[in-house]
Length: 239
Length: 233
Image 1 (cartoon, rainbow over the protein chains, first blue to last red):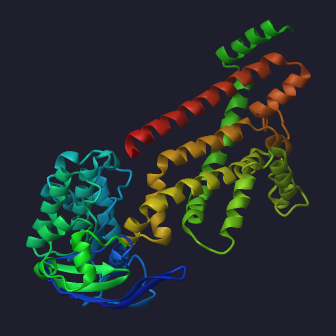
Image 2 (image 1 turned 180 degrees about the vertical axis):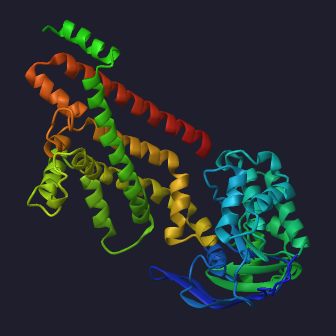
Image 3 (image 1 turned 135 degrees about the horizontal axis):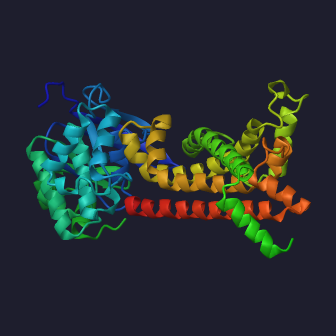
């Protein structure tokens, strides 16, 4: 499917972020090789969403560097895209939402690619419906389809199912697992530890703006190396 | 002439499509619709830019534009009069006491409404869309077409509000148009003049058309918001 140079691994080097005198991220470094699902977990305010946004380029870090292997803004489709906790749906039909995104990044044959994306995720029946009137689960599936339509090499997911019921959550998880199987690299913030256990091979555990543990998932769930990690898994770490 | 027979005469003016009467209605519509079109072409992009741009003094600009929404029509008329008068900066154009001058004056009246309402609508949309559009590389002016299109129903309501204000005002068009019969006489200036002259049928007939127009505008605004709700949720 791709004969282009990979943008991965993603190198995050010592990033920090300050807002109104508060240091919300401090000394965050990690490297993300191609493939696999990595969970970003941690209590509220630990800096999970912020890290994803900085990696995706929505926010500039106060310090440090986000380094892609190949210029991520090079010609063609988006090399990495992002799905938000609350899906942003334009006031248009489901199909038009996809077309808009493809037109924005200059994709070839937006109409066909959009229809393909809806088809791939079983959303074709919703094609003509106003996107904002879809259910929460349908909107999030559409958001993922829209991100996929841009043919990214990597996906950032910011708590993609935190506002959905169990059935819709399962559908979202299936989509994520399928994308991962096809080789998509995924960095995903989640509150749902069970979901992280089901989907992720690696865990970045954030606490108070720092990465406290960066470990293979099995290792982290079974033998967390820090006090905070243990407390978080036990549900005792509230802040 | 008593009021009853005045009403009768007014209805016959409307039903027989009296040429003088029609001419006044047509001029009013031409002036106001052109003014709205100009205000939309200028005001929609300006309002959208004001919504997403961040610059020093932005709040002052917003307060200023909001304040201009209440600009008294006679003052707008006076300003345009001074600018277009023989010794004014645009005097050589010879626009004073022509329909063009009336269009300029009404555009000036409607423009703040269009800019302010667009700014409000687009700013709200931008807050909701910002991250997604930024993610797609649509930042700065590149985001504006998306935002204007997605705000279309609310923006149409704003334009209709401007249309209502322009079609109902009398002061500005009276000052810069001069209320010349058959040339710059609009519905509102004709009503003012004919009422003071005692020609109630023409004034009443025009008044009915104005009221009907207002009802149509409100129906259209209501329809736009209903369609918008169906689409936008």
